[in-house]
View 1 (cartoon, rainbow, N blue to C red):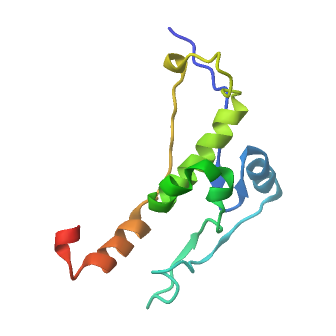
View 2 (view 1 turned 135 degrees about the horizontal axis):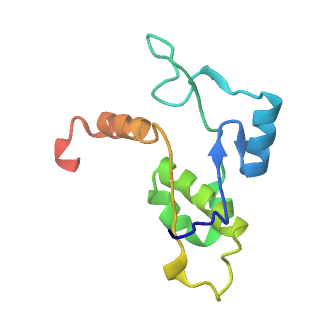
Length: 130
């Protein structure tokens, strides 16, 4: 059996951005559950309880890629933040790293529903653009 080593981790959550802040928030019992406020959920007929990510300045982390970020979904931008933390944590910034030896696992839950709903609302009268 081949050995697998986890060398870097990154996380973006409502209670903490980064592995250390997330761990500290968990251990202190911090929570961010409440009525959702983001566009599309701020005044529904039936309030929905959940936990939302705070506004994040992704462009500050990737100033050279602001053009790419302009067209990236919110979910993609969040994934980039988690990826960057894991990459730095694993110390993969060296030119000596063999890219064929790197594996990446990304996980998430309920990440695209808001984007899909907003896209549908924006283009429902113009289906040729969907």
